[in-house]
Amino acid sequence: MSRIAPDGRATTPRRPHLPPRPLWLCRVCAAPWPCPVARLTLRQEYAHDRIGLSIYLCMALHEAAADLYRLNPHDGPDPAALFARFLGWARPRHLP
Image (cartoon, rainbow, N blue to C red; front, side, top):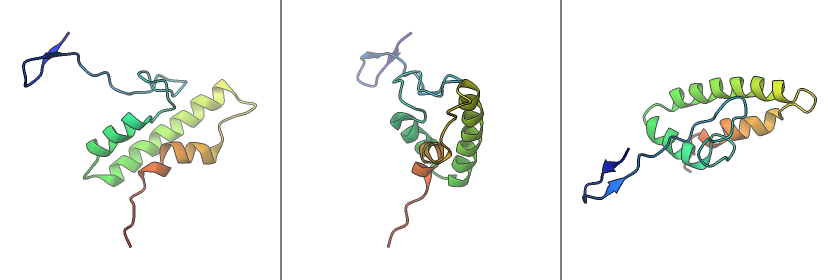
């Protein structure tokens, strides 16, 4: 299925950068989710609700930790790495 761009060209719909569970890798680019495109999209979607973004990402982190632990219980996911991956990038930047 294609869409028509403002200049009249047919475009293909963009696939959302979402994680198939239990792997938590982006289904489009195969990067660890949230991938860079997903991060940009989430920042735009939650531009006026940073608390909502943090809550959403906390829930995703909780689910990912459980899924990834079930996949590999002996080496389990590193909590600090998961925090950086899911929440570390979403913190608001403080200006001096």
